[in-house]
Figure 1 (tube, rainbow, N blue to C red):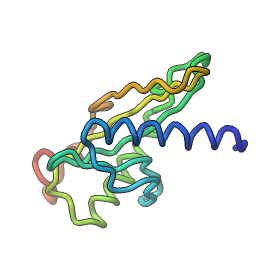
Figure 2 (figure 1 turned 90 degrees about the vertical axis):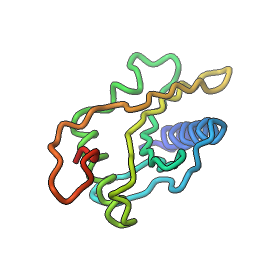
Figure 3 (figure 1 turned 90 degrees about the horizontal axis):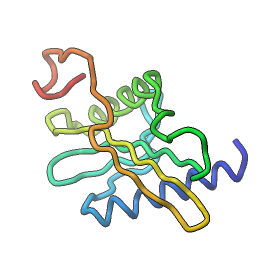
Figure 4 (figure 1 turned 120 degrees about the vertical axis):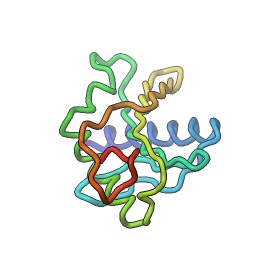
Length: 134
């Protein structure tokens, strides 16, 4: 990746962090790695854990940031979230996946927050809480 691309991504994550904190979320981890993937932001809101994927694009881009969240990427996020929950013994804690799209432009960043960004189709196994979708 080019240095400019990496800076855009870091700036987008920072904009997402500031937005989430202004909405009352508590950031508990940034760029957490495990389970063969990375979680951009892990937050708490009340008792719930929110795994946030941040997608940043130039406002002049042709594609929407959320379009980059392919089924394969969703599976990597699910595996990473499972590792996070296991490592921290949090399987009983409600959680969800959100996506924050950051559009960077000359007048600054515009942030769009999509809660419950994707549905999980895996069947619950007997080791996990009934609400836990994987």
